[in-house]
Image 1: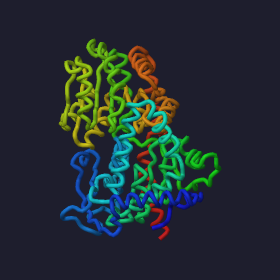
Image 2: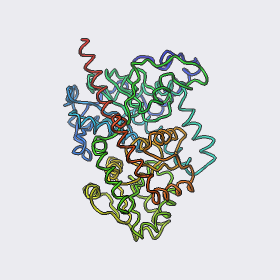
Image 3: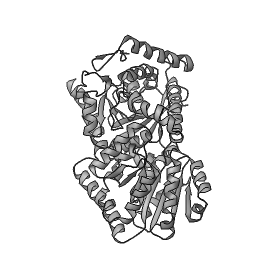
Image 4: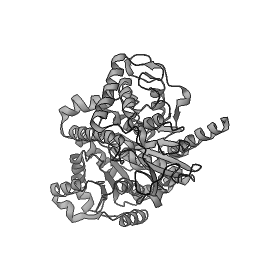
Length: 496
């Protein structure tokens, strides 16, 4: 296993930084054990939730009837999507990659490193995920915590090369999950830990699909090909901008970094023109404007969503607005909203834990009439996340924090971020014209709601820009990531 914590892209780490990285690994090894000698058998199983929609096959470890060797992998058409559940964002990006791979004739294999509960890998990821979720929730409740702890950590702490040095050491404990995965299958990681673990495990063709628009060393996985969604991110990563104070660092090699555009599902990209035309037609005909509120995995910012619902209630009763609310797998969030806004219950239809009903609703909404409030909750994480993707096509405005959804081809209203890194997603979206500025308080959020309702041009201009952006290839990132992963494999074969 190559040492990747002492020198990062030609930039030596201090002895102090390396010792800290070693201590970090020792801490997790002491707490969760070291299964470096474990030989987890592998089993392939169709994903029960998005297997039919996106062709996804799950990669399971240590199941009865499992096997070693290739375990049924298609080593010619297979591509692994390596991910973790940390909020909803990384799962959603994984679904975009799987969707593109499926549309291109490949078989997407789903490896969630946060689901192998018997492994040291999952225990280490779970501990860090719990801390991140706690920080996210606290940041929404405490301005002081957000200002003094959460914003600086997300904005500058994760930006440092020293942070990457510790992550690389920790990732050595995650490598065993790949032991019985064929090394010749390309792997696209939608979080850096699956990429780092795969490189440590000797996987040959690893692509690290970086999610954010704020360059951070957190996302570096030397030994893999890094892809980014924006040119701003490309320049920041190329020179490792600000990742060691004001130091001028040795840059990333050109062959290790590629711009692709936004990681978007095939089902959304292929229908952009029709969906935008439908939005413009509804606006012209004075149909109820459809707002989609999506509440992420941390359940943060419920208060802002409650204020939006209160603002829209008169328009909903008057038939001038309609509302989709997806609370993901957090039913308690919907129950709290109904408790806080008693009149909400009377105008709402609940679509809870019935996936076929959700699919039918989303399909019928593309051409049918929508009134009132429609609430969605699904206990399963795949359904909870993909529900937003299904509803996105028929909504007029997506209301979201500027996280992974900042890059999606739908008119967007951005509420306050969770973590300083997210603000750059809103900046990028506003610059290419498919979203608003980040509304950093409730008053400005409600102002933007009223503008969408009353203005004749805000929505239609965004729709026009989305169509133009598609023509420019801005939303083709998922396809290009898959192409790059397969190209790495094919070029290596040619060399042999």
